[in-house]
Image (cartoon, rainbow, N blue to C red):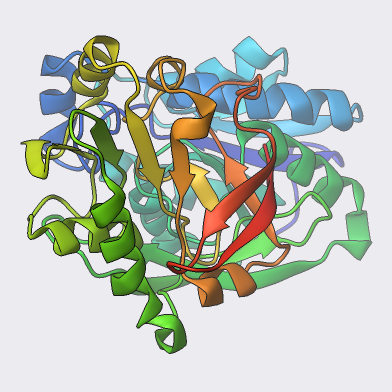
Length: 375
């Protein structure tokens, strides 16, 4: 289909305005009724602001003309206007409530408008809805805004999304893209499913890889590491255990059953709180100085924070001493990271100063490695 707006590059913008709301309140997504539950628990939307940040960088890095086709209102138009860019065309009708059907309809409109790139804000569910309509015909790029972001379609931060989009669009006929997996976890399930294939930009700024399972070859080290950490826990100290199977091995060594996808608080060999919210973590750490935070690494992505553990917020981190942050991972998971770096996305533009530079990662009771944390 020939372009009809102008000869400028054309970008479609779609925002799932409720994406990510469940993270801080210990809901593992905002699908279905979870968005209303999140609001009732005091959660605030953040996807529009994150898209605005991405678009502001795109505006700065790609000063040439851009025709923007935006979903109406909170689904894209608001973020475009707030970034200082201009909407050439809106699709859909602005509404206070949005659904997966609205996301799919917007994606169809972007396809019909023959956009060069669809830039969206949301999580794995949003990615799945968009790619269900676009397949690999249109290149897409996710501004990370959801609770679950296992898919390989997301930039590491909103600012990176803007940089990647600008680089891709500026390349013109030399644009390079590649296919990657869209992954998701069904409500109430633990296993990640490969549900679609998307096309994303290839850019030097880097798109995060899809989450991958821990390789089996280092499997024996993980229970041993969990047992070693469990045995070293001191009476009277609170331990915040993040999500993931590696950290979960500590619970297994203690004979406790917590949550694989959330954050648990353990003290004196017992569970204090299962699947704690951000508010609960903050209140607990506020009254328990010296608390220890134990984090795993997301396989294939290298994320410590910002992917499924949004409960661990900047204000929670501000109350945890730097030496009390422990990172654990299987050695094969570390070896598979390309590039060999760790990442943090705490939902704000400025980096969290305490989590920078090089950090030790424990990979077995007797071994550790060191990697640099980037933002």
